[in-house]
Length: 452
Image 1 (cartoon, rainbow, N blue to C red):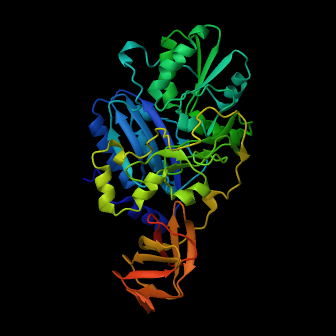
Image 2: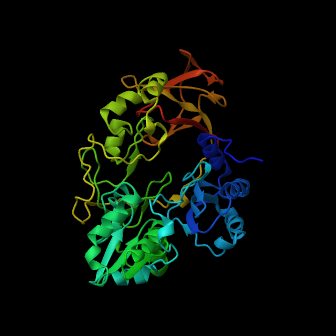
């Protein structure tokens, strides 16, 4: 019985591309008493692996919290696997407005002490006594009430790229940090104000609303389904968006645009920007905002130190990060002194720029391709790239695709191939190939052969 991933993220990406079928990115959560979280986890893995469902899921004795990618054709079968459990019958699935077939490339289900690290002792208050759920229209209406205080229960790296107008956005890195801060800040308004809260998908507010009711707040409300469901209702009902900017999401997209307003800036040069980057250095992985120009110049790195490290031999990179806790952490959110324009929450609540319109990601043409290998070197002065053929033969006249987070997707026709220093008409598996490339390529880039 398979209970863990057997394919790498790269292998899974190729399989998804080859399948050429649309996938849906979705999230959901449910609080419930689960007697045996490990068995629950294993049963889910077997059922979801059979449906080619991928994602990052946490289960605990208190419930489940999931962000996932599911083949559209398997959506109803996936829902049936949830409704096999009484506590998930009729569960709300928050389906992303923007779709990306590569939002998740592995199925990871982990058993945790809690599904959200809130730092609370659940035995000290009634976690089921939650605040009133508000749909998008109701949420917009209560925001107009002068007696309303709206609080963003997300973290600084989420709220700085997008938030509701007039919201309190705590400068915190974890959910648990925000609870005592807000409790102290609003202690004099427990009776006379509407405490209205929101988060990405609703799960943090479920617990936070119960906590604040326990603290004595009389009028507690929460956005049903969070920002994800709010955006969906805006489109369905033609409502005005009180949210400005982009909604940060915890998958490979790193963000879903709600409005065209850009309210944040590149942390390296200060240019209006709301695109997050994970530092390319595996010993860092700092999450920060980086514009396209800085991304190209810094090769996805947060500092010159990290830029130097990624060009070191792999054995030296491993040696440098040995024993460092951040080595394997994706989405490390700490702030860095190297980022000159890291001013979370300091910018005025007005748009710095307008985002350019992009084509609907669901309408992009699928390119049939097979992986050849990955970039090994780029000779800047000669404008020559080098890679080793790992899969499939390559011939003069073939069309290739070079793809990477900074390079993007670039196509070339192979009009000349140099194999092991000699010009030839074809290259076979194991050959080291060099060829002219009129743009800079990077070590993280993949080289594909287009076959359709």
